[in-house]
Length: 132
Image 1: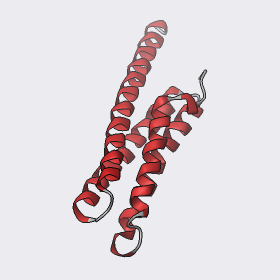
Image 2: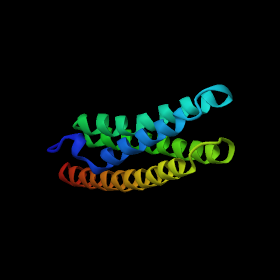
Image 3: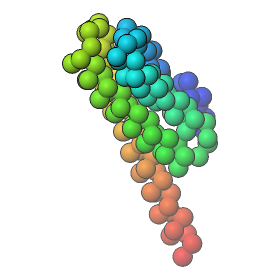
Image 4: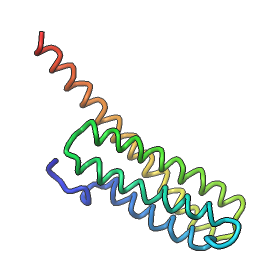
């Protein structure tokens, strides 16, 4: 692939999301919410990781598969943040910013995954018609 993963807007926004989520989790990572903080950190960090790994694989199918995993992790981040907003005292503005970034990343991942899926389908159709 011709560009580095760091140039992908989805990776850049996912990194920003992971950073803000980390800050949110730091505010309550001691005591009864320690597991929630760990889940948030892990899920948030896995989103840009999956984008980078998929892009770096050089294989569109692998990239699409990694994007699907990133979407799952992003959904986990959003669900956990919504729970945090209801149960934990923290900076509501930071939680809302993290949620907004997670929503944006989720939409970006979905569109990119759909585009890759269409490309893979078109490639299969072309290769299928050439083999006949």
